[in-house]
Image (cartoon, rainbow, N blue to C red):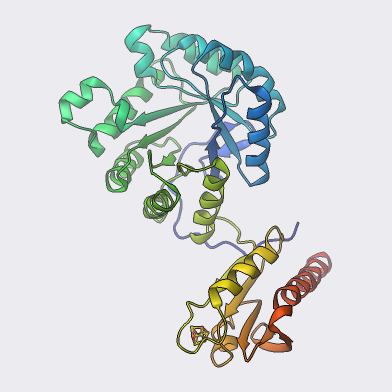
Length: 371
Ligand code: SF4
């Protein structure tokens, strides 16, 4: 593929130890990865693999599947083998499923050793099995399932309580010389969550999985996650992210990728910049921006495409863009690098932009090949 627009990260990354989730490195300076979780019954192998394929196509790099029953555990070997991206089994309480997931070849297991210690102290055996198979563990502390002892100590799920809980859980594995760990400390309030991760980041070198729990429906969840991840990543904190939305998981991936691109942590591919419109606009800018976005969707072109409502300021405002359109009098001025290259009727704007985008992409590929 084409190289994307070069990245310029918003901050130097926190130094963390590196773990391998299958082929995906997490921490230790590896690019921040984007993950999601399936919503199917894991025991329904076909539906789960179908959803994983959709997630993979949308850019998901790691996928988590829930494993609450024996039927789900039984499905793990096939899912782990057939998935194109590493699969993490998400397990609560039952150590037998942890062993099953490790044996099944899952790339990692999410489990909280505190829960397991409470009922059936198998932490030592889990550490051994995970070490033997080279399987890392995510310790996922959630405000909703905070250890009772810490709830009593702090009264509620404060940042201190979340960070202390995670470090205590990690220490249960460290006792058995197991440090192949990443950690999350999720809360539904971005302010609490950000502070919890800050404290955790200062107190250990484990890679961190960022997430806001129960972030809510798409609009609210997108904003909560963008704000929280932005606050942390702008301080270099965070090695892998999961946006939680009450929406199809593919939407989580789109949002996650956009967050990383916005922070300069990921190459930008196609980016549509459109003017907010104003009293000078001679076209329905919102509609045109939507049509252009739809027309160019799926193009793997590292282009910034500007959609401007008028010809007065359009080209000038969009000089930073590679390609753009400014509308006026039922026509569109198509410009490349701020220079008007042609003028077309409004009905031809989208197809002309696509043609131009492909031409520029071809040129970029040639330049890339010769340079
Ligand atoms: Fe207004 Fe034209 Fe600027 Fe759009 S490009 S905001 S229509 S002046």
